Length: 134
View 1 (cartoon, one colour):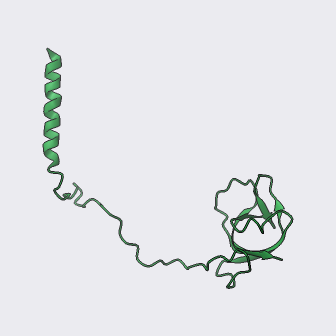
View 2 (cartoon, helix red, strand yellow):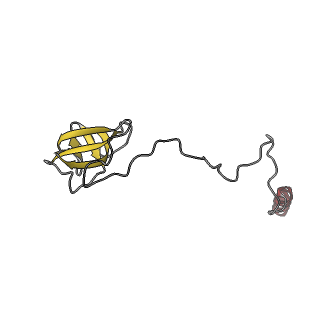
View 3 (cartoon, rainbow, N blue to C red):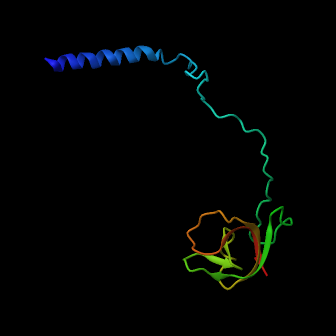
């Protein structure tokens, strides 16, 4: 006899909880803390980060490196992992792979990103904005 009674109690509890929820098309009421739930993200407004010039992969940079930009010149060497290229202990990330090859003498412009995660096990990541033969 306990089974029908348990089912009846569970059914009544479900009905009671559904009644507390209110209609689905009703606007959300404030939470117990008094704050209304967030339904959309606010517009961040204009960007405060400085814009970077578009990279020019086949030639030199169209403008000098911006604040924090660095230019490195030298001969690229292969890293210990496949497809990893190093220039003066900087791991080259991005850039034109037809120009950036082991043994090539190049001048690259970009920014070091020491916190960037890579699959290469050596060098400080250096995001290439532009490259040209040296």
